[in-house]
Image: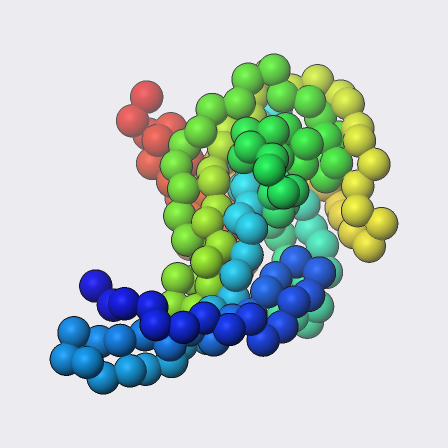
Length: 175
């Protein structure tokens, strides 16, 4: 285990902070690592009438519109399950009668602290909350079989969506 000797915040933005950590190796040598500190997020597999709900939205960092599962950043102090319920209403226009946690994973642990909580949302009823003002989202629906095909064919390129679809497909196959 490395010992953190010093940590310095070098940037604070809208959704992230960046810090430079100085670490001491077991041999006493010191190294630095840049860390993107993120409050964590949720990924939601929303299922209605045997179809998975996806959102297509422009992602500036990628420079293109991506097909993604419903997802969103946790608000300060907000429990992940609450975030999941809120995001389904904001992005897909549905309220979940049943939300089940399927797991969690890091998005990019080599440099980012973002922990993603994966949920399954079922028993959906129409209910919309206002979304973020900068989001322009198109709702799309696909069967699990089609979503897996798209993931394996490279048509889904968002990592959290790939992980969510494939983990859900594995779970569905075990039932």
